[in-house]
Image (cartoon, rainbow, N blue to C red):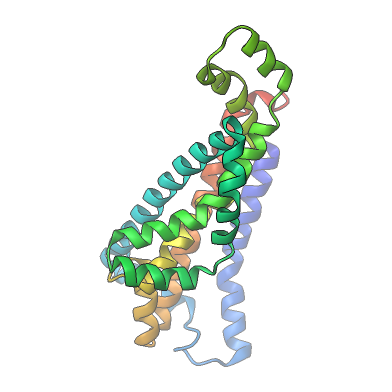
Length: 251
């Protein structure tokens, strides 16, 4: 608990220092307000345009959560396929490596041409961003399961579902939660990237509009919202991990 409080205090100090460092940088850099607006201008955007910001934030979060759910489902199914049917890994693994190393910028262009401006390409970008860390950690967690326990359950004629619930899933859970810390925040980043290329709503769309209109205040306001969402996603994963493994904490 003390460790968690120290971490929370460190982040609070970070947030408190941002306006001071911001103002100091403006003072010494002499950058124009269009390029680097003062915090007061950014606060005015957050205060005066809450409806637009809230609506577009909701759009981005909807895309991020839907894509994240699909990525989790696909990663779980494929990881179990690798464990239960080892021959599938030899066939599928090269495809996952190839797709993982293709720049998302080029994939976004292909998706825009083939699928058009709708929800599907945005979800696919989010899935691609989140899928690979989840898959790698799930496979690693499943393979870390105690083989002796698996053999004993097999001797007792346990079904695959029972082996999954009793051995595989408890073994993979710490690895799975560790992947969430990057994948959950990555889903928000992926949604914004997707909106950057093809969207007329969402935080990514607001970024493009702010850049074209030279609205530095809107641009920084959107970045603050995106950063707050990413931090909220990260801390929600940490809190879930603390709750699930509360029995491991010293009394």
